[in-house]
Amino acid sequence: MVDVEVLSAISFKIYEMRKYLVLSLAISLIAIPIANTLVIQRDRNRNEMYGEAFWVFGFGVYDMTDTEVAEALGPPFTDGYHTLPSYLGNITYEYPVFGLIFFAIATWLYPGVGMMQHLWLNFLLVLVFNLNLVLIACLLKEKLYEVQWARFFFAGYFVYGLIMSAGGGKLEPIVDCLLLMALLLRQEKQYGKAMLTLGLSVQTKIYSAVAFPLLFISAPTSIIWFLISSLLTVIPFLFLGASFDSLISHFLNTSNYSEVIVNPMYPGLSWATPDLFSSNGGTYVWPPAIIPLIIYIGFMLYTLPQYLPELSELKKGTLMERLRKLIPLYVYLLPAILFVFRWVMPWYLFWMGGMIFFFDEDEHAVGYLKELTIVGFLYAFGSLLNAPYFLSGPIIDFSGHFPFGWWTLLGLAGMFAGSAAAFVLWRWTFNRREQRERDIRKAKARGEIVI
Image (tube, rainbow, N blue to C red; front, top):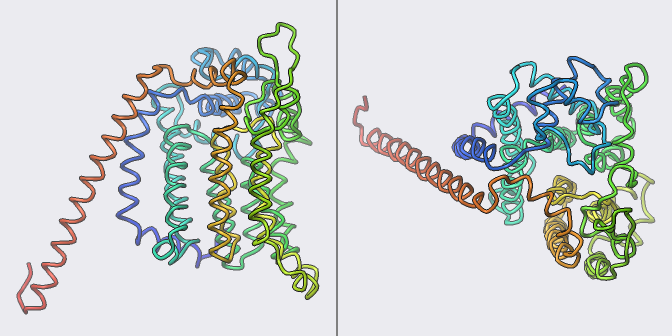
């Protein structure tokens, strides 16, 4: 599926980055067991459970809630760490088929539920995360060494990817890997393969679908490959009993997915904040909840003009050429999606990060990073503005993922200390090797025989 030239470019980049990948893998391997101890990685555990259940119930798992699957499989899945919180008890499996297949194959390769299988799943995701670093370096090319925004983005993704893989065991590294591969194929003008790969990314988690219009503009006929990839979901849905009701409820933003709102930027909190203390439900009005949206609109009105093409330019060329000139505007507007949905977790902020590669101008990329930063601040600010609501439930539930409470900070300190030790050892090892190579070159230059 992947072009030979693309594979060669990836292989060369792996060789070029080998020193840094060794360090990244060392830090990742240190983080995996520490994070597994400090954090209840509920999404990973749940995907593990559904992966095991797939070999028993097939695609029928899409009709089963977490509790039903746990009871059907028995211990250790009934420990309460493999299911969602009680207020999401009616949720069936909502991830598309490729994500389910990944965990089904992973649990088949390493059967036996328990600590080692947890570490195995995190290890697989860490490998994917490190491959993502290589793909990002391929897409950035020389900008990684010459342009500051590229280095900021690379460093930001390193932190994000490490948390998602070693610290969370989530599907995001796989989604990003397929998306980045699609962008690399697009860069090499392999549009059909790019669209097929993007389709697989969407079949893992649907947020990467935001790149579909841009790949379609690049080559409209390549849509056939996206449709072919969608058969991975269509066939189980039509013939094998798969149901995607929870995914649809999540995507359509309905309260059927969850009556609890966890997005502090969601403007609906201003007129309908859920009353979690009331026994019969209900909502109340909280005007401060609209402030993040107001700030965001003001920021966008101030910065949007640099992404607007000249009106005279839009009058020239074919329809597709005109649409291509609107690509910067489209990408810049994408983070606004995060204000629309009721369910937005903190790490969703980087879901739109990969779209930065659709900008041709460095100024646009810098502005996009600033926008993502502003949205991150608004997420935190919205949590403060809606503190009475979030402290009454969502934050308490989120803190439940850290069983050691404040002692978790000591564990994190240990992880940072281990990472620092790995960095010191890495730097000493490669500095020593490079010094030896320099000494050998100098000896050869003097005509000495080196044994």
